[in-house]
Image: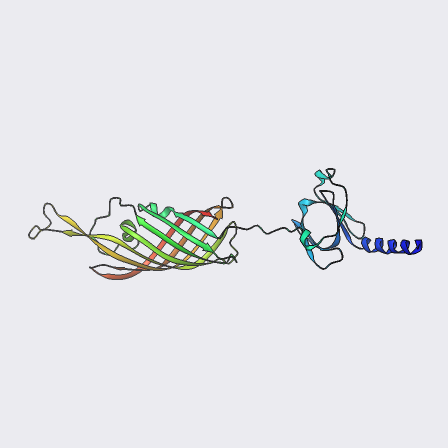
Length: 274
């Protein structure tokens, strides 16, 4: 009986010695077969199982490999063992995993470029879970400051709509070639719709522009289709600073004329991601 017990212990010790041993900072010892080590964690298969486990290096004091080589981590805490050393056979419920850092998929932005023309502009963007696609809804409206009252003739290529804006909205679709994380860049297409005021001089019959005259105010409609390129930099995990340049065509419809012309824009934004 003693010989059988001795043989059993020899076999058991030989099997365990063929495994790698992970000594954790909390004093526990984990037996398994290491399959991968990267910058932040260690991956291994649990003792007597094919289930893979990921353990953060911040929880590991040192590893003893099957060839006897020792690799130390967190050496400044090497003597801070508080729990008795015990061999723990991992089960799926006890497995320790390191999750990938997650960033919010919703972004609220303020458009500072709109304030140059005394408008208020903001947008809501939703980034899909894969981090490579998003859609954005921009909204802006004029703040009612002193309007640009010169005779409207449709020659102000980009600013007549912005200077006398009533409101504007639209829809953008963005593609992130690299997954959007703390920072990112994107390309996309956008459509815009809005209305604006424009003015025409009203001269009394026979006045010939001599003396006093007034302006009549009308409402025009603005459409635009654009291709844009933009990006953002994370000042923190939640606070983003971004910029976007866009080129395309606009169509403006008034009682005077309807026309289609080139349009370009530049937006500077501050965003909160959640």
